[in-house]
Image 1 (cartoon, rainbow, N blue to C red):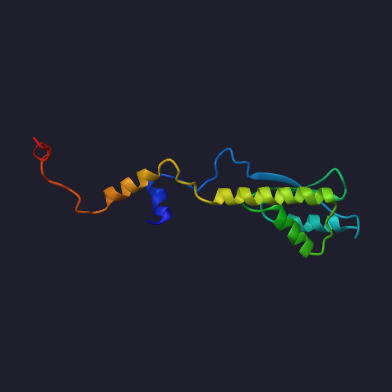
Image 2: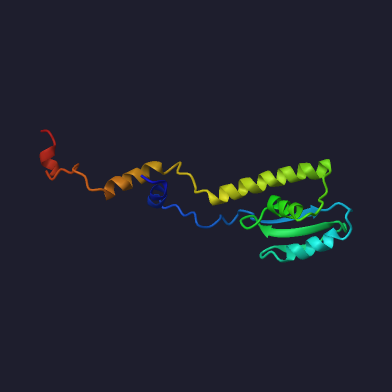
Length: 149
């Protein structure tokens, strides 16, 4: 039996995230001071992305981005900026924060996109599948004649 069939028979729905799942993220992207003017150029480049909200940070070398984890990730945004030639801050603190954010967003995205596991109702799936199949395991004898007396 295919996994999709088993999930359908168990009545599981996987087409929308749970209401409590915090899929909207607010992250800070930090730039190096050199070359000058790169924050303004990055601002213009990020504004072209649909579904991404941008605002200036308290520090003139930062940009704050808001996005859904289903659409974007901090890792993808920063990688695109690096590929475009922007110099991002690379201190030890920022590296540690990045590693944690990259891992947590990747894990959350994977969990949101993967189907729910059948743990407690797995036997129900096979019972329903058996009921829907044509099989020769049916006895037409009345119950009173089947019992031994």
